Image 1 (cartoon, rainbow, N blue to C red):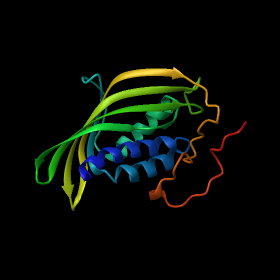
Image 2: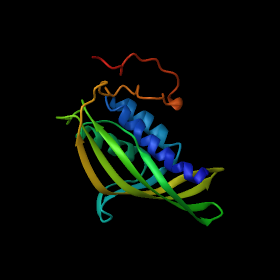
Image 3: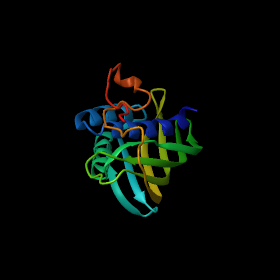
Image 4: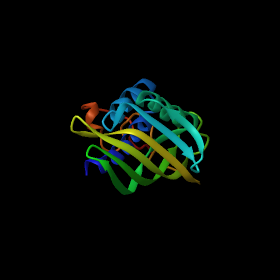
Amino acid sequence: MAIQNTQACYGRAQDVVYRNYANKSRAEREGVAAFGQCFTPGANVTITVHGTKVLDRAGNIRAWTRFVYQFGQANGITSTRHLLGNIEVKLTGANSAIVYSSGITPHFVGQGAGARHPAIDWIIGNYRGVVHRINGRWLITSFRINADEFAQANVTYPLGVSNGSGNIGFPDPSAGARSSTTGSARH
């Protein structure tokens, strides 16, 4: 179960960066902290398109967090929901394993830089993580993301558009208690 949880942790960390897109230092600070819950600090992350074309590589979680933030800024992404499933674990030793999963991720395009029209960019793909038990915790040491299907739906957000304040759904418990009046719907 702890190995499977590394996948949910990854998805949540990605969402933490995007939900704070309006504040770069906060997005990077909270993103690094969130990725630190499931990755080793020097984890290698690679993202490919259609299994062969390397989109980017990062040699540590700080560099990966910066990539995630910049990708969101360049594409006007105001938040995401990483939905991972079909998790399969292959033990390779007493303290090592490979974990595979697949995912579908709506990227909500709205008010951010680069957004011209509200939309949902759907990115579908699969993941391969090499994990190791380190000091009793399973952590990802190498992660490959493969995006292989893409779709876009033009939408409206009748109950409001995320403003990047981080006030989306449940608060992040690792960030401590925050009070915010932003993010409410206006009609």
